[in-house]
Image 1 (cartoon, helix red, strand yellow):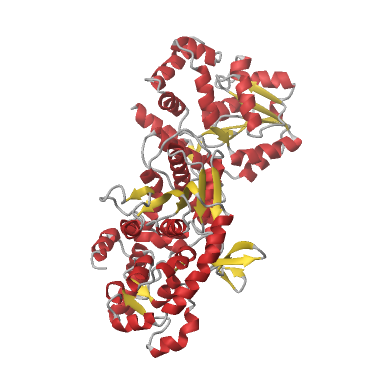
Image 2: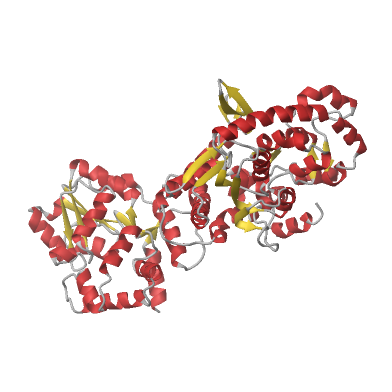
Length: 640
C-alpha cells in the first residue's frame, strides 16, 4: 500500500521544466522573497534523499547503513515533538558517528538547480531575499555549499535545525514575520513541498508559489536500480539545460557518459601499466583527449596529427605488393578504386589517361575477394609501382623528422577510436626501421576481429579495447559494426584529415586535406550538428567530473546502441543524411532511394546497402515499418 501511496506522491510532485519568467513575475508585487533550499535552489544527484544513504553504504562499505540511518532519524524525530532535529541527534540514535561521511556524500551529490538559480538571481537585484529550509544538516555546511554554487547576496538564512522551529508546522513563518517586522502580505515563499512550501504558508496568510520536486528534463535514462545508475540519471536530469536542442541533448545524454567511461577506464589502465606519456591520434582522438584532460592531470598527454594515410604511405616502399596494400585499406566487401589510390597516397586525378586506357573511372568498384586475382587490375597496378615507391620514400623522410620533433620513443601509449591497430602498426614499423626503442600500448574504443591482419605483420602489437576486444576474447560482439559510420561521426574533429607532412621553414607540420564538412568556405549542417553534439558531450564530462562510481562500458554505450540498432524517427531525422568520408569514398549514413526504384533495380539496392555506413538506419528509413531490423541485418551480414 505504501508503495502505491509513494508512487502517487511522486507523480503529483513530478512536472515539466519550469518557466523562469513566470516565477519572476510572481514576486514583482512583494518586498520579500523566501526560497526553499533543497529541491528548489539545490538538487541532489539522486532520485530521492534517502538514496544518499545507499551511496554512502556502497562507497564506504558500511553494512546496512541506509536502513539503520533511516531508522535513526525516525527515532530522533519521534522524540523531538515539534522542534527540528540535528545531525547530532540522528547519530546519537545510530550509535556510531558517521556525520563526516554523510556531509562528504552530501557535498558530492548536491548541485545547483540552474533554472531556479535564474529566478534567485533576478530576485536579489531588487528584493529582500531570504532562504528558508527544514533541514537537519549543520548551517555552516549548508552555507559552504550555497557559496560554492554561487548562491549569495541573500539577506538571511532561516534553518530549522538552527532556529528550532519548522516550515512543516508553520512556526518558522511566524518567526520570519516577527524578525523582519513585515506584514504577511509583503512576502512570497517559493518551494517544492506541497505541504510545507505551499499549503502551510498560505494558511498563515503568506503567498506561495509551488514548483515540482522532480522536473523531467532529460529524454533518455539508463535502466536499472543500482545507485550508480541512479546518480548519473539524476545528474543529467538536474543539469541538462531546458533549452538544449536535439544535437546538444544527444551529446549530453548519450555520448558524454560514454566518453566519461572511456576516460576513466583509460586512466586506470595507464596507472596499472605505469605509463606516463600518451599520444592521442587525430582526428577521432581530439575529443577523447579533451574529455580525458577535463578529468585527469596526472599523466602527460599529447595530440599527434596522424592518419592512416599519413602513416601508411611512408612505409609502402618496404612492401607495396597488391595483396599487402589491399590488406592495409578498408575491410569493406566493396573496394572503390578511389580508396586504392588513397591508400597508395597518389592523386587519382593525375592518372586520368591511365584510367581511360584500362577503362576505369572514379566510380569503379571491385569485390574485395576478387581484386587480388584480377589480371587486368594487376597490370594497371604495375604501371603505378614506380610512383608508389618514389612518393613513399619522400613522405617517409618527412615522417621521420616529424616523429623526431615530437620525441616519439620509449614507453608510451597511443589512443584512437579503433578498430584493428593499423596506425599503431605503421608507427611501430617506422620506429623499428629507424631502430628507435619503443614500447607502445594502444588503447581503443574497440578491437575488431580483423585486428589479426596487423598482428600478423607485427606480432608484438599490444592492443587493448574498452567496449569490445577480439584480441582478448574471440567470442566478442562487435557492438558498433551495424552503425559504424554513425558512431565514428560522433568523434570527428572539425578539421580535415592529415594528408602528409611538409617542411615549413625547418618545422615539420601536418598538411591537412580540406575539411569535408566545409563547402564554399561555409560550415555545412553536419558540421554544425557535430559541433553542438560534441559540446554537449564535453559539457557533461566537465560537469559530472570524477565521482567514485563504476558503470560498465556496456551500460554507458546503451544509449548510443539504442540509436544505432533501434532508431526512432527522431534518430533518423538527426543523422541519416550525414555524409561519411573514408579512404577517398563519400557515402551517406542512411539515405536509400525510393523503394520502387529498388524493386526495379535490385543490384542498385545491394550496392547502396553495402556502401551505406548505418545499415539498420538504411533499412528502417527504406521500409518505414516496425520490423526486427537488427535480425534482418545480422542475416544479411552472413552474405556480405
